[in-house]
Image (cartoon, rainbow, N blue to C red; front, side):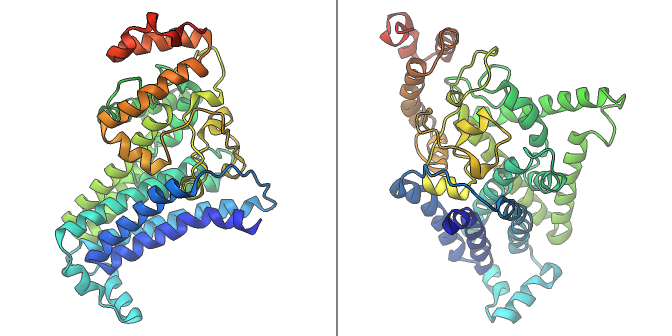
Length: 394
């Protein structure tokens, strides 16, 4: 049983690896990035699935370790900002060098710009994994002010505090329908989806907050508007980055944040791509792409068990069920992200999965929606739906 608690601390180890690599400088940064990619991609490939469903007697332990994500991410981002600064903000480098005997200032100053690109990649990845994924779990706990506070600050690192509004009150209501900004229709390019979902998600969050505030007679331009407050939180972080390291560090942080935000939308793309749902029917496990790959599950707080999460968004991550009969992703999360970033490969692999979903999971009403979606997608193979036996089974 101790192992089942311990496995969810894998993300702390990955975060520590990221910070260590950044501070060591030079080739250590790129090696750290490679190590993280190997842990996820190779680990998922060789370790198989985790379908265990243990019962936890001390769930508070698993909640507190979520809260630890905020200081951990703050340290990683500070280390990244420090690594591209010309000075020594807060005397951090001198302090670490005196304690460890390793001259991180010299190591930083000798770092080639290509390795700084690895810092950008690592930092954005950590903003997505340690920030957004943890915040996703925390901001579903609307009854817990501490979790909401930590979750929204984690989201502020990716300029995406609106996620705590749109995702919980919009996405979970409209998922797998044309009214959901985060659900990618069949045939859509992931790069277009990142832009479209970001814009529509912000608009949706604004309308949701406007509707909420109107019930209390409060103007949407009030500071009580969660959208406004959230974006101000991100502004504070940007100003802090500029204050610590100047223009270069500030722009570097903005780039990392946008990369982290893009990762969220790529994950949205993967989780519901091509799904259709009869809006009159409650969300069911079949309306999300699922995966039970071990490393992704352990290091991402069972976000992988997305089918159960959408069937009941109030279930804590440790209690989510694997649903092995649900529609399955291509592989683990990071592997699927890489594939999604190569559109021809993505569509080659996902088109058969989407067609199979129509045959195996769609209701009669959804089969009609699927046919319409296939026609809109423009995929020649699907344009012959009327003669495809796939559509004659229901």
